[in-house]
Length: 141
Image (cartoon, rainbow, N blue to C red; front, top):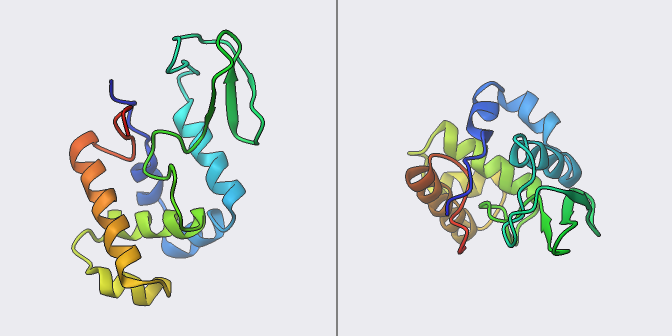
């Protein structure tokens, strides 16, 4: 089962870099946008298929009222288990979507980050876009 594509590329395309940096400057703002994009058509529990939910333990997570499984806004997206700060990951995704041909070394310079970090996350972004059309990931990831 493949999660519906998160429509972040369209959000990114509508912004210039200055507006982007002001909009996604904190992890909370990034989580908020992910939650809205992920559950636009409603919550469906991946474990039992339940549609009723309550607030999870952490902000921007939801807990199924049937089986008590909790899912975060980043779960089953490229941002799940991301070891870099969410605003930096968002900026990397923004820049890769805008210029997929930009070398990882240039991304590393612009973002003041490690080359290997940019290379691996860029690869992950391009793979997800190619496979799923956007930032959603296969449910087994």
